[in-house]
Amino acid sequence: TTTYYGIFDTGSTGMTIDAHDLIPASMITTNGIQFTGDSTVVNGITITSQTATISYGNSLSLTKEYGNLAYASVTIGNSDGSFTVKRLPFFLYYKIVSGTGTVYPAHSNDVFGVGPGVSYTNSSIASPLSYFNTGSKLTSGFKLATLSMAQFNSNGNYVWSLLTVG
Image (cartoon, rainbow, N blue to C red; front, side):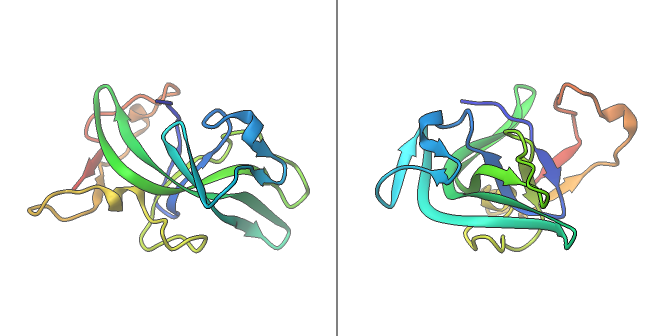
């Protein structure tokens, strides 16, 4: 189990997380995540051989993320409140490079994108919340409470009633 704080993004679709500190450093090179076969399981993460590049920005500075389609169980929340999504597809990246050639540090763009639809990178990747089974009597989705500056802090702590899922 590893804890990471990601950006909750209503404009992006799908989860992206850096491979560093999740899989052995020996598997990560500047040219990709190295393993043999169609997939491998490392630390509970199924990494597939399906590679992709995510591009974002504008014509003056196009940033690119490089990685693989992966699957894992993901727990959302903390000890004050959480739920687990089983076998969630996500983008496991190993490198981010800016349009000017700057390589960004590990985990600088971990995103929890809850936007509608599927990722253009891989149609298997959608909002992590779309994989959560809400049961037969609830409509799948989420609701954010009214945000105020008092609800934010630098510790990344769970804020009661900020996010409702279901």
